Image (tube, rainbow, N blue to C red; front, top):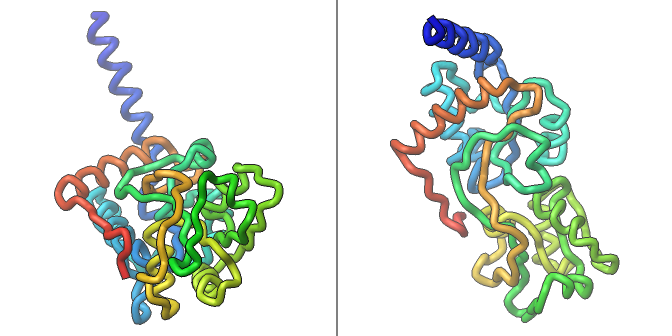
Length: 247
């Protein structure tokens, strides 16, 4: 009798958990134009993360198409995802500073937050404290920008923008010395801006980080778990591999 009662309680908890889960196709999905992970190409939103969103939600039985994704400047999308409700932002680095701000599904790729400079400048950093000597560019609300602020270097000059293409042009014209950001995106944006990526180099690493889908805190655990399970099925079928310096 005790075993039967325990099974009934377990079944009730499972049903309650499912009842709280929100349909994935009723959430609002946010992203940015940031090659090579997610980007516009001739008016079509493309990229590995975008493909994964469609495949994962289809596998979960609640298809979301790329046309439903709201593409905004990163800082605006990030603030909206923090506020909620029912928001999902991708592709986002999962860092210690962000851990408690979202509920997470992933990872689907490994990457790095790096420091990039022109090769001809011959900039070397003995440690991150040496950043005090340079003008560093970063995208507002980007994981690299948050990491830079947490270094608490009083004399470091940071130039913030909401547009990574503007950072690429500033790097090309020597208006910034160093660009702090995701490895994938920096070289893709340099190429997009017309620079030769081979003229630039990674001079330091801020943080090793994985890419995730992040859900606003109001989204139920059951919903996130459903997405996670579907994502794992998709990834097990077709693993993701992103070149560090994709064009």
